[in-house]
Length: 237
Image (cartoon, rainbow, N blue to C red):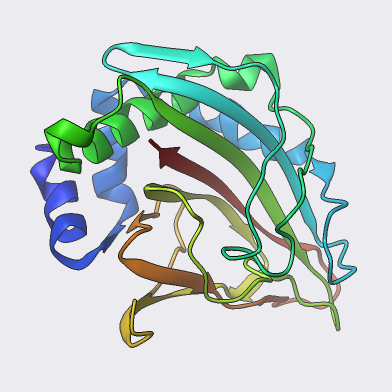
């Protein structure tokens, strides 16, 4: 698959929805392998204890990488930080999450996502502003939903992340309804709406041009667990 197929909508609109089939082809060209083992690692995430709303519905792991031409280097474990300008709910402090395991940090699936993200985002960045290596943060998220306790994928609401580029890839949806992504332009006018439903469905976002947010998820079957697993990857100069 030619990268322009993925890059052009992002360049034109500031965001792109990439369906699973197209993402599968693109990631395969970047070395995707052993997806099932990678997806199963979402069953081993630590509780996010920094939720200012008091919620206990989000689990996550985090890692940082330096990604450049032909190189992917994991950085020492570090906190995730957002200013309150970008995250009025949970920003303004260093948040130390459990690290992504070494095995998953080296996993072929994650490495393929990082290679593809680099190819798309670096290619869309003006040459004179491209960094020698991007600061890339990777988040494994599980948002859980129970009867009477909806899960909030973006509890901060419509937001920007304070980075250059964002990739959100669906890993799994289990027994949940909604979780719809809405995109607003900088004047806060709606410009896009879609739902990540199939594993590998992906949203690409130019963080300087649009806001994004995701509606709450609720269980379809009240007697069974419900959750939404995503991989979020941000690129910052």
